[in-house]
Amino acid sequence: MALDAVCLQAVLEELRPQLLGLRIDKVQQPARDQVILLLRGNRRLLLNAGANAPRIQLTDLLRDNPAEPPMFCMLLRKHLVGARVADLYQPPLERMVRLELDITDDFGRPGRRTLILEAMGRRSNLILLDEEGRIIDCLRRVDADMSAARQVLPGLYYQMPESTGRAPVLEETEEGFLEKLACADQEHKADAFLLDHYFGLSPMMARELVFSASGETDSRLFSMDESQRQRLWEAFAGYVTAIKENHFTPYCLLQNGRPMEIAAVPVRQYGSAVTLERYESFSALMDAFYETRERMERTRQRGAELIRAATTARDRLRRKLAVQEKDYEATQQRQQLRICGDLITANLYRMERGQTRLECENYYDPEGGSVTISLDPLLTPQQNAAKYYKKYTKAKTAERYLTEQMAIARRDLEYLESVLEEIAEAETEQDFLDIRDELRQAGFLRSQGKGKKEMKRQAKPREFRTSSGFRVLVGRNNRQNDKLTLKDADHRDIWLHTQKIHGSHVILCTGGAEVDEDTILEAAKLAAFYSQARESGNVPVDYTPVRFVKKPSGGRPGMVIYSTCHTVYVTPDAALVKQLQIR
Image 1 (cartoon, rainbow, N blue to C red):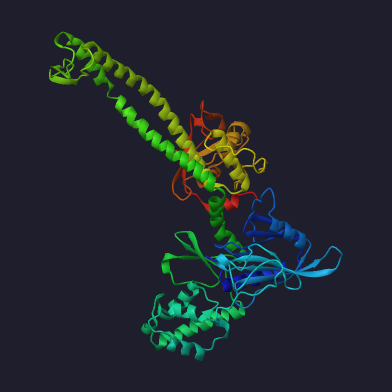
Image 2 (cartoon, helix red, strand yellow):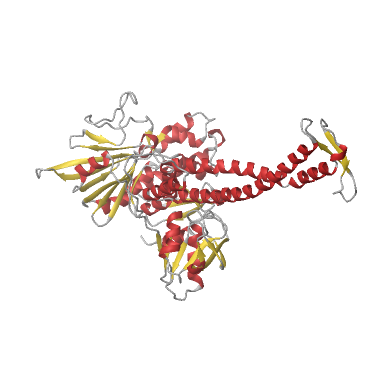
């Protein structure tokens, strides 16, 4: 969901005392729509102008930066590095933030820059202004062809977005509210009435106010009696009071354990279908809420080519394997071909050239039945027998060849499934580059020749520490899995992997020390979380000393075999993963 104006106000009330006076040390742009200002005191201020998640917050999540910073990032560095936060301001109930910054120019003269975040869904933008209110540059330029009413271009004076014409909720009176309610089309839904007449309300909060008044979210005006209309006003007025007095609490709405919405006040309209989880801050709430969504978005954007290549290769292999299995099934009928050759040979004395079929006794049949064999009239009886023997030999050879090829196809299918799982779990730009390089070396992705230079730095495995202090390493891709398990791990360490389920290799670094059952379970939960069974329960995880794990001859990256193991059953726990992770 997009951050509504009231939640945005709550976020700014939380941020203002933490940010005022802080100096900007660095500017980063990890994604096209994201800018991070690194402030003194190790604070990271995220400004997101993406259509799906526009917001401002302090973040603890580390995001990977591109090898070459975008031009907009370079511009912000030029103007903002060294600036101090002078003010953080939101026009009343507008989905926008003005970040006022005091700067010192190259000649030592004081000045002012304004960074504006417009958190307006698909029209979201990030705009840098000089002290006269002129646009220096913006994340998305809007020319006259895109909008005749309002252009956002360098050199123009900044203009506020046009007003919607609706009344602000903060200025409404009881008399005015009830009068509008009486004059409205009574066939309309009550929440639609609120959204049509007032700005500052999100659809969810409009439904919540109606639910507080009538016990339903879809009540129509004609069905509401006087007492319900009065309760609607009281709920409306109570919400306005909370806004004026900044009585906000960060809540996450969970449906089946998954984040669904965020809110600044308790939401009751969903009943028992949704649970409320309270957070200590709005920034912590938004980190938790948007983390999974951002990972999926990164996968969609950066991994689209890789997903397409791996999926195309996988589907092609599936079709090829289906044909091979059909041909293999046909080879299993080859004994009948040999029998036909034998029966023709045994009946040569009865046959003449030009026959189209041979009817004879089948002495291979225990019951002594007869059989009809098709013949080629252009061939002699001896040649017809030789033809059936040749087909039999060909089928026998094909069986051996198809067995080998089907084993290779199944191996490659397993490999491509593991690559697709890698892409889904990829977190950084380097992860995608490593997977792309892996697919190229495996022959599933063509080399593009000389192109844009890519980052070439050694990616490190994910690192965790168990409650008892043991270090745990989790591979990010197949090649790293191989290196982690077969080269880096001590032979006394413990290797863990989900049983018959694609996932990362996990190494519990013991150095030969004894580990307790709780430590094994924590490491197993990490293995289950970083696998295709992340959303499942009671996941089987095998574990064994590293010395028992080997690479099969000709195995694809990430494929290993092990001779002995123990198995535990665990349920992946995202909270535990965050708790154990070393940042």
